[in-house]
Image 1 (tube, one colour):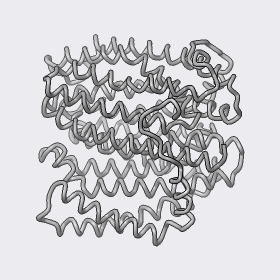
Image 2: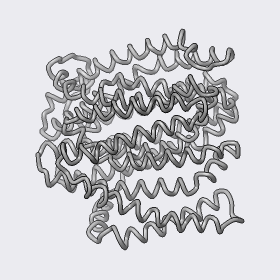
Image 3: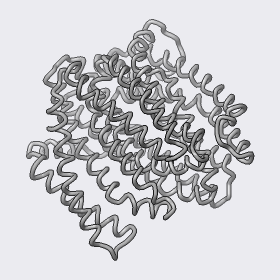
Image 4: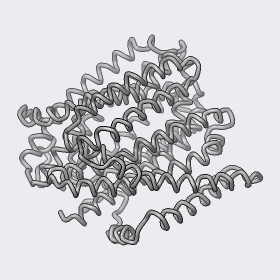
Length: 517
């Protein structure tokens, strides 16, 4: 595959990934207030708790997701179909076993875990049923990882993200039907869970892009030698992921245990949904960049690696800065429209979360190169330190600050991680220029974002007679126009625009899967 073809696939995967995440966020933005209004703040907190428990148990992946994509991408580049077959079939065995263990954990949590959280007597039966639903679905969810890994290695994330649009639409429809037909919370949760499984058969169908029979890709067959090779690399990713997931996903669980009540998780879910829009963009960038970074790193071309990291950081920073500043600029109005006046106290915590996410996600290109290199030992140390320092902050502040305790813990965690990247990892391990990446790639976008933000904020204060969606649209338009102008004059060069136009020449594929896609 030529560099231009690879760039177009990365661009397509990124665009469709972002569109899918925007649609998913929009669906949640509409459905969460409806569901909170119908089921009540406290009972909706049970959904947030179930999501958090499910997310935390993803650490059982042992880092295999990242490790598999890395090796599969390298083998795909070398047309080593035998290794791909051996690895994928072993992964089916691995993820099947993990799914069974995960299922047993949820069954145990359903039978005995209610004592760990501040649940009322009426909530315990609902909580138990939700745990059983997760136990029933988790095996398929884990096995679907193998399919996504294979398609990622083949640079088919654009297709995967288009299929995810179907799931987002179904999630939205399930919520509307649940409210109109007055479903109980367990019934809604069953159909929501089923809607998340819909992409699996479409993704299996797409595996035809491999010149390998489906049974030789997904037929369970253990190959200890090749699995050990992937696991040897992935074990370091697992340790890093263990601390990252613990720091991130244990925060709401700690809130459920130590905050004023289970309804705090609804507050957490409200601002998390908005912040997750930006986080999901960063996830898309990492998914798309990881296979490309693996191939670039395999070439051992330092100049090419540095160019990839710098250029990717520039454009990711511009995009994420625009998204974050628009959200911060309108955060109070969004919460007012989204959930009502009683949620306006969450504005400060939402803004802190958004700025923390921006600082974290601009580092995605560097992270993709780090994961591709396999040099993750010191990253494990930094993750461990950040986790150990940040979790007690959430625990001790939870009784007083509720959701703010989780946000402050997350902020401390990310400051330690990003500081470690720039002070040690980038210059010492990757042999790249930290100052050039931060001040040359990330800094300009943030600088001109702040200038545009200041002017747009003044404009917002002048528009006192305008409210609601109209105010959001006007203020956002002021910011976007100013930010775009500043970027074009001071940051974006003519060659950048020419490159972007070339990428746009690729025909846009249908959002729905087809046999020839």
